[in-house]
Amino acid sequence: METPSSNPRGNGSRRRGTSGLTQRLKEDGKARVETGKRSAAEQIHRIAGAIDAVGMQLDRDQPTVASYAGRLATGVENFSSRLRDSSVEDLSRDVRGMATRNPMLFLLGGVALGLVLARIMKASNGGGLSGDDREALEAESPADDGIPGEDDEAEEVPSTSRSDR
Image (cartoon, rainbow, N blue to C red):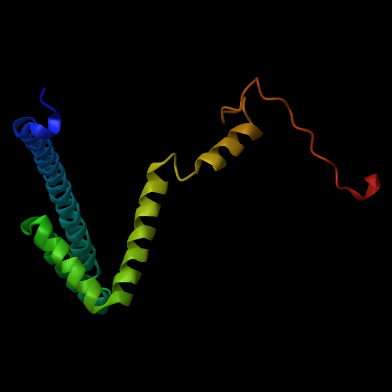
């Protein structure tokens, strides 16, 4: 009788199947990252255009601020191009190198990125209310639809006049 360890073909085919699956997963993940990278580069490109437009509007009234906006727009556009044109491996290598050379800058950049992402997520999640805040608001006025009408009962307001004291 043949055991799995005495059958090299069975064991080898299982390894090939696993490595094939692993390779497909890596390729799929890489394709998704590339798609996200292209999308992010396009959004950053639009931001650079918006900064440049603001700089042009400020050019007559505040030339110094317009100059800074122009330089910022150029830097953001360069970042967008680098993101779009570089591979994920190149970007990863650059980030690791920067973290090694300037650990404090890398840490501060991570904190800034986290704050930006938190703001984006908060803004996209129910108008900025967290789940707990939304639940508390709903518990305070479950039947109130926000539109004044016949259903709304008059709310008693405590009197604060001197005669009540």
